[in-house]
Length: 167
Ligand SMILES: [Zn+2]
Image 1 (cartoon, rainbow, N blue to C red):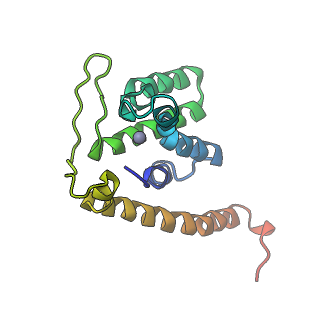
Image 2 (tube, rainbow, N blue to C red):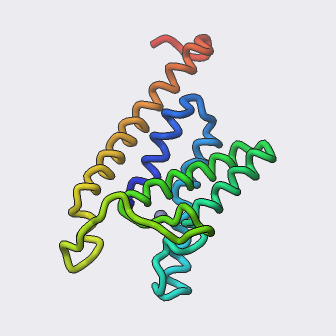
Image 3 (spheres, protein in one colour):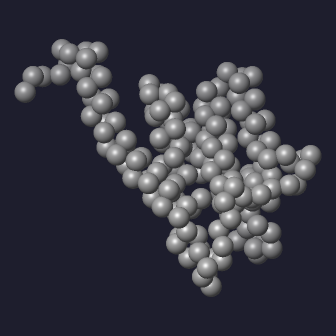
């Protein structure tokens, strides 16, 4: 997945927890992009020798352990970060390889194989039908984002009508 990690996480948290606090929403959003921090290692240290999905931030077990630690400590923020990261890995599994059974096994296979139709691999992905789903997720998230402000404002008005002057 290229561009829809953050929008997908926003949609999921808004649907799963409509009354989520801004802190929890921020935690899930941060977690939804955190695994790709390994791109820094990929480009700056490893000189693109291994696919970045082979690095620890793209191993589900890391985020499961973080989620368990958050549950153990009663930290919803930590659980939110872990949940966002797990969503990232789930979405990466559609056209990418994520080793869900690591460290027991290194087996991984994408759900959908994107054929190399162009010389530049990015172009092959951008012109594949799966990218249209990413664009749809982005559009849905944008609609949810712009309408949520009005919904939240209406909910606040219902809760505390005296604070809102009638116009
Ligand atoms: Zn990723």
